[in-house]
Length: 175
Length: 154
Image (cartoon, rainbow over all chains, first blue to last red; front, side, top):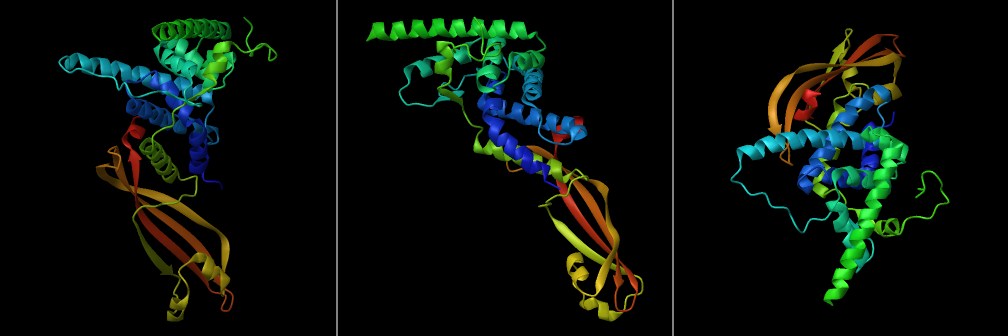
């Protein structure tokens, strides 16, 4: 009998980066995002035990990460209210996406713009572009209609296009 | 705007072409190890799957059935026994007993794990093809497995 741990590890190797990218939108740091991914995988493990034990489908995992992120956010909000004197700084060197090509100005601009999208739009973009999900699957994962998923995606692309134009004009004007 | 979902022949949006030049950053080596270690622990704790138990082990062999001293020369491995004068009768059985918690520990990544002591008992019946005598071979292993604490609340 095949060791299920090995099947899950292979699945993690293939899908880990896209899961981490999605989790980054629900965490304040890369480490917290990795914790969300691990928490979600643990929940998925138990969920899959009654279904043959193999790795889960991506839409369910994205949904679970979002659920874990919401729970984490609630506990973090309560903790921060108790620690109001502590200043939380983002790691400005930390990026969620790597550019495939060097010196790709447009990709760098969009990399930052994706991180700045609202969660509703960002989740759809991440699942569509890097999760390779259909709008039907995205809708099921986010409990919205596939038309709403498609609308959010179109709106996100227009926002990103606007930001790309604006940043390129600004950079070239400063040169 | 039509999307590739509805019509695969529709051209991609220019922004999509740029997004395709970005790829998600990989999980850190430490994060990857932590998740893989968790998966190994989960697999080890599941009785339905054969496991690679990489934890502390103690093994005892118990002989029963009035075995003569000459039997002591037989290899303790069931496969080796089967290759000599003894033949397995039926299928071996395996069952686990949870002996109790050994407390909460931190793993190398600083994650809290509960140590659980398990006893795994394997039994097989073998027939001495020379004398016709039946013997029961019992293998008892005691191991400590580590379960993530988050596991316990699900």
